[in-house]
Image 1 (tube, rainbow, N blue to C red):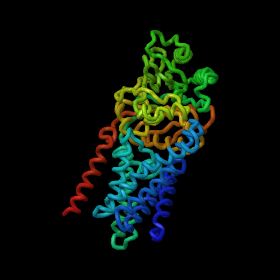
Image 2 (image 1 turned 30 degrees about the vertical axis):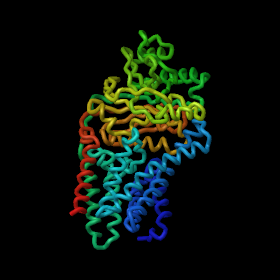
Image 3 (image 1 turned 60 degrees about the vertical axis):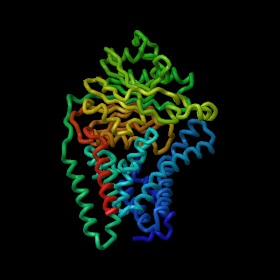
Image 4 (image 1 turned 135 degrees about the vertical axis):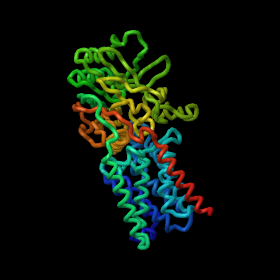
Length: 492
């Protein structure tokens, strides 16, 4: 094995940056396994826990700068923040996230075995990222395996963190294979892990529900810097009404905030609302169901919502997991001036919808709605299951320009399909608009930054995967039991 320890900090930087190639749009799923194996090797060879923490921090800094650099685009190119402030804010976020690999390195070096502790602690750190400060689980290494890796079959049982455990365990086993005394054990363990994962592909967790339905997903391609200007709003509403009128499908889905206006859904007769009336008319004339992303107002509260329209009634889903600094302002009294003086960011102070919302009944399906960033949280998606027969995500990743953000987001949606055994429909403003099969495979997509309609046929499913039943608690319980046994061994 090459002696990466001659230049450990440079090696850690390289491993962190390269690790991103495991994710979409590259899908090189073996890369994170070898990148983490390199990091674990550096942790093994380093002299103490503090040095391991430094190596973990450098790895994490390179990993997140390479993976979420597009935060800068949303702040500067679209949001209008000065370049130095946007760059500093992006760096600070990456540096904060790099503290998690640093903590893993520190604790692993103090454990009885780096190669046992590091995989366990890495996944625990990803789980903590899933909820701390409202959560930012972006680039959890388990996502890199969706949908092509054999390890992806673990998703219906243990979710994305279960796959992360398989990835990090594989990294340790790869490293162990270079030790002649343990080579046979390492190879046998790797083969066993992949055979078990492959066998899970043979299990049918769900079954088709009802007849397939036709769908149309609309991609309006409205420039983000113009979307909320008065001159463009009317043009946008008319464009989406015209696109909807062209469809003949059972279900039509418009992107997040496709109608960039505030609609009071408490008014007496919504069918006569100036904005919604054309969509009610289309639904009635074509016997269609239409999902419309918009802003919903209620008294002095505003919600990022999806309205479900058919010829008989209207239903509403309100986004409950809001993005800090994007959809609500933490410490508003302290940093509110940044939004007032430095940023052009609409909808930066929204209200939260209820965590317990039921699937919409549309087009003879039970549809679990989620808006944009919400589909990064597996345990939140399963709140509407097993009742829901399919998943729908509406997004607007135009904030991130021509970056890899939309591709990464698409891959995370693929993981939600794997975990739940449900098809996922994604309608977005600029991409990635897609139909995802219940095994996480891409059935159809639209080119990014085009104005187009994606037509297809989808099937609803019923049934409960182990992940839908237990969520993350099964894998997290197993991780903590393993860590307790490991540290108990150290004390003994």
